[in-house]
Image 1: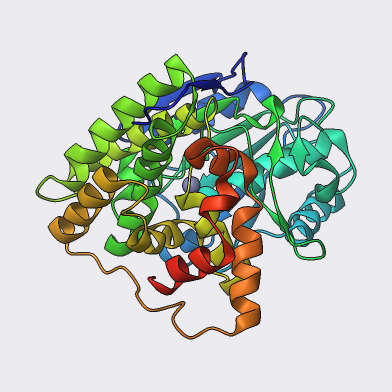
Image 2: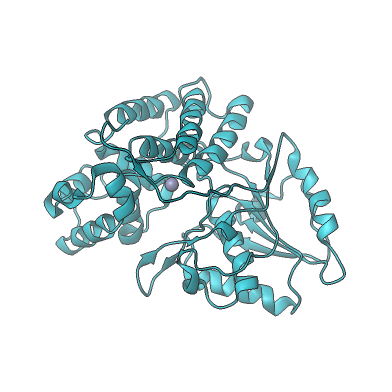
Length: 370
Ligand code: ZN
């Protein structure tokens, strides 16, 4: 934990997910949750489903999709761009003029974020890029439900939905209370089939969010309590025998939800800005990016660094290595720019004068360690 002065986050009145339903097989309740919404104006619910399920079959107990509904599969090869969001929005309004009665996101962070963004656009109109920033949405979106099928990002509980605008290079979400889900369904059965490495990378996002929040100066007592419990659950999962046992999959799903709730009132630190750099310059996905960045984080988070590598070893997962060793001068410059731009998290971790610590030479050195 940081020993410096405590700063307040400026986020004073936090909003959480309205309702949550938790338990093995809980996805079977989705039909009952949607039924009262299907009314005279529209019976159509729009489902955004991770393309993983297109190849591998839908979750067994998912029986909520009716012939009135629209199903859109979300390809998660690349992280969402504003153009992708705008394209999906057009698909939804082309199908019918009437607003759908609900938007449902079933999948990982990308799919859940896409569903949030479309729900917002349906009522606020316009383009995705109009709402990248803080509190730009004017009205609540269409009623929305998330069913995560992998645990860690906390997208089910956060007030943002991340997207990149390639024209401006801006990777920023629609940060708003209106982005928070109305209902989430946490069904640990859904994470049974996640590939092991992916399960680890994504789960570690919850651990790192909270390690960074607790290591920073911007603090909130309730956020700290969420973070403490998230880290405790992650230790059980990743220092335990099998991170994917039934019990541990249930624990990690809770950790993900609590971790997302924790960052609603705090900020991340050094790991996330470096990972964002990898994403913008080399197209590396968020969660594996965080894990790679941990190769260079010993001086900033000595305790967390030690524990993280213990978890890697315990679970026998592979963390990619050597991805930044032989880049061009121009690439290192872009990595620097897209890292130090994250002012709030870096101030949280290193103080206002963080650029005196993270000089271009220092940042290059750190990237070369990855
Ligand atoms: Zn994250």
